[in-house]
Image 1 (tube, rainbow, N blue to C red):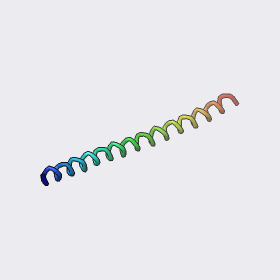
Image 2 (cartoon, helix red, strand yellow; image 1 turned 30 degrees about the vertical axis):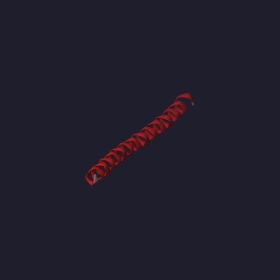
Image 3 (cartoon, rainbow, N blue to C red; image 1 turned 135 degrees about the vertical axis):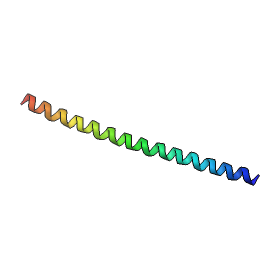
Length: 53
C-alpha cells in the first residue's frame, strides 16, 4: 500500500518534469519564431521603403 503511493508519487513527479521540459522547449520555440517573424517584417518594411523611394 505504502509502496504504491511512493511509486505513484515518483511517477507523477517524473511526468511533471517531462511536462515542464516540453513547456520550456515550446517557450524557446515560440520566442524564436516571434523574433524571426518580427525581424522578417522589419526587413521587408525597409526593403520596400528603399525600393519605392
